[in-house]
Image (tube, rainbow, N blue to C red; front, side):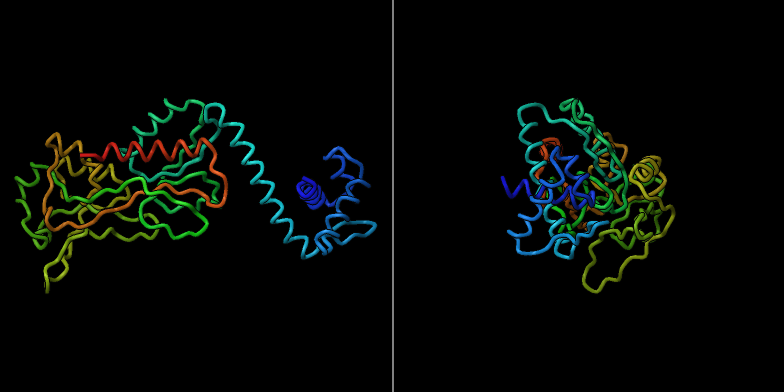
Length: 298
């Protein structure tokens, strides 16, 4: 506890650059603050501050120690918060970034709000790759592999990809029997917001078969537009299976070239690593994982 008190006093002095101001915030005298800093420096064997009659500034060792001290105090604060909240319902603000796949997550989020009314959801829907830490998100739902060592992740599901069109479209234009037939069809494409490139349709090719050049009849950057246009008979779209599940069940769309389409995309929840997971985030992760798994059971 003596060491913990030293961390707290040191951080206050480092942030205020004054023994007097730090003592005022801590409710002790400036001389008591000075003695605590002197004992801390003696124990560490380094000088933490350059002192003069006019100013107090951090040494190089002091700057390094400040970063560690802040991290230690933040962990203690998070642990205290977690313990205090564990006795009651999870509460507080949860800032989340989610992909533009409303048909997948919106019903789940609505049910989460009903289950945890004391959690304030701050939702950002975007298909761009957000910087979880620098942009201040508590949690992000994203597809694909995790490439940032600062983050922790939990896979909560996966989904396949299908090529779909309306029965009326195939009645007018015929049903493609092999990927090469798509060259004579109307194709509705998706453009990645991050790099502006078109999504490549995951079509399996036979040995020696050349890649099919797909006609570009329409390009957009969201799921709902392509679902709508496909149901209106305007062309064939490459879609995540969850986004067209109900339309397929209702007969508004049908799949083609199922034997040639190969892709499974992982869906994960991502959050900043190396810190205590507050109750509101823990229940969000568990709720999303359980519901997405249940909704994808056959």
